[in-house]
View 1: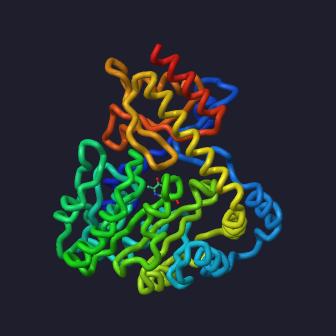
View 2: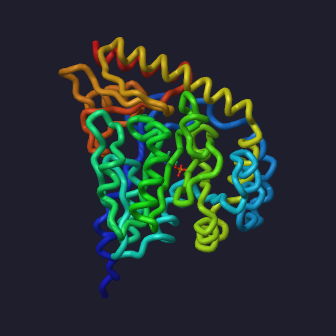
Length: 370
Ligand SMILES: *Cc1c(COP(=O)(O)O)cnc(C)c1O
């Protein structure tokens, strides 16, 4: 008897390469303590109000969550000054990315356009959904040339993805150029949605001046993605949100699995939104830590790229291999992110940690470079 074969597009998938987990490294090198600076998680953990909400609601776990998450949508609408009927919520931004592709692109016919390298979920979900992905290499300094990106857009393009600030570089494109991209795209491809992934935007030095979401009404062809995984400290609960054009928001809620956001995640998100103090302390910690890490790396001869996010991308002084550095740090109990899976084998990315974590990382780096 034969086993049914998965579709060719599925068989061809290279699985997502996540950062290594603390448990894996602790076991492999027999370490009592491991520091993870590989996945851009919150260096302060999660908001105490969020953990309190999870405990308070734990006994309600037998209930289904409320379909459509209206309480969270209303809270997000207030916080981000957007109409509630334009808010989408998903099981991480990952679910929103996947559904936007499925809502807008006909498999085998339409395409999406993004940069190379970029957040790997865009091309992976495109492939899973049978949608071609056209990719424009970044400039050598990791900045964006939107004219080159636009040159890839054709009559079959239904989505264009950009990340700002970008992952893995931390590059922040000027707001005026993003707005221009939305205008140019509307003219060239009226049926294409510009998806601006602002997962790291609240870490930007001047969020209000850098985010299209903060400018009031969005262009009619533009969607903004945000997440609870980074500055709100809830990566493990999987909560993403977006502000979408009305029509696409309606399609989103029709297409989304009714209960994809679980009950405890929704309660924790509501509590985290209320904890302005924790959020502000996170931004302060990341901003200060980012500067300390930059100075330390530069003083050791590393080249550090400009970053408006909660991580730094860097290269080592001549004569040192990124893979050896990564391995050396692992043995010292510090996990960072090698960028080989992004096609950047000579570069490394480190998330900004808390004071003790940053110190341990700097010490391990000094030890490697000595
Ligand atoms: C971390 C990250 C996200 C967040 O994804 P979630 O599914 O919400 O955890 C989105 N986009 C980029 C570019 C990221 O790096």
